[in-house]
Image 1 (spheres, helix red, strand yellow):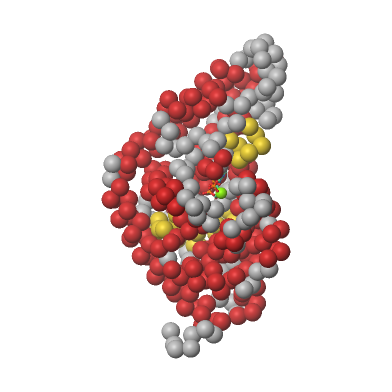
Image 2 (cartoon, protein in one colour):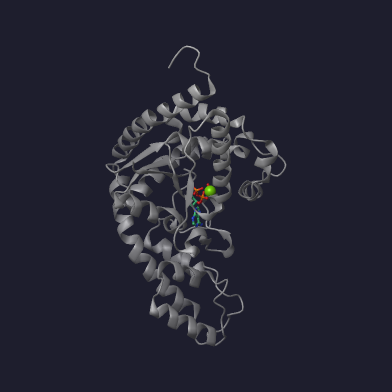
Length: 339
Ligand code: ATP
Ligand code: MG
C-alpha cells in the first residue's frame, strides 16, 4: 500500500514564499516521487473559523490558493486537489471526535494560544476556532493519511490530532490511522519570518509576506523595505547577521552559495551596504518566482479550468471520506439502519 499524504492551505490570502519553502516545495517533490497518494485540501471551512464575518475573503481566495498550488507544480492528474467544505463527511467526523477532547486540552495548545493572541481573540474566541484541531483530525483521518507535511507552527496541532486517533482507537477499535508530521528538511525553512522582523512568522493574516503572485517590481519594493540590522547605519559599520531577515532569506533561498558566505564575512567586518545584499536577494528570488508567476498567469485567465479541477478532486475526495465515515459509524455503533 502506498503511503497517504494529507496537507493543505487556508484560503485566507494568496500563498507566499514562506508557504513555498515550508510546505509547497516538499509537497511537489513528494507528488513527483510517485511514492505517495496525495490529497491537498483547500481548508475554507477552517478559514471561516476565524473569518466568519468576512466570508467574501475566503470565497475570493479559494481560487487564488488553488492557482498557487497549480503554479508551483501540483498536478491534478497525480494529486487530489479538493475543497474542504465540499466534503460533508468531515463535519460528521468532527462531531464524533469532539466527544473525545477536553476543553482544557484545547486551551493549552501552544499554537492555538499564539493564534488567539495574533487574532485579538483573548476576550472572546469563537468555539469553531478553538476546536479547529479537532476538525483537522477529521480532515487527516478521513483520507487515512499517515503523513502530514506542515510548517513548524502546526506541530502542536498535529500532536493533538494524534491523541484523538489514539483515544478513538482505544475505545472503538483500530479504525483510524495515526498521522505523523513531515517537516521541511531545511530547519530555517520551517518558519520563515515576515519581512518586518525575525519575531513574526510570515503569515497571510499578518500582511508581512512576499507572495508567489507578486510582480517583480513589488518583490523589489518589499525586499528594499526589509528589516536588516538597525545598528548598521553607514556602509562602513560592522553589521549583524543574526536576526537579519535579509541574510535569513539568503540562507533559505540560496543555501551553500559561496557568494552569500563572502557577503556575510564582509558585512560582519563592515564595508558592505544593505542595498548590495538586497540586490542579490532580489536576483535569487526572481530566479525562483519568474517561472511560478508565468504558470500562474496561465490559470489566472482560465478560472473555469481551475474550478473544474477542484470539482473533480472533491468528487474523488468524497468517495474516500465517505468510506472512512461509514467505518467510524460502524465502530461507534451509530448505524441502526444498516450501512
Ligand atoms: P493564516 O495566517 O491564515 O493561518 P498562514 O500564512 O499561517 O495563514 P496556512 O494556510 O495556515 O498559512 O499554512 C499553510 C502551510 O504553510 C502550513 O503547513 C503551515 O505550517 C505552513 N506555513 C505557514 N506559514 C509559514 C512560514 N512562515 N514558514 C514556513 N511554513 C509556513
Ligand atoms: Mg496558519
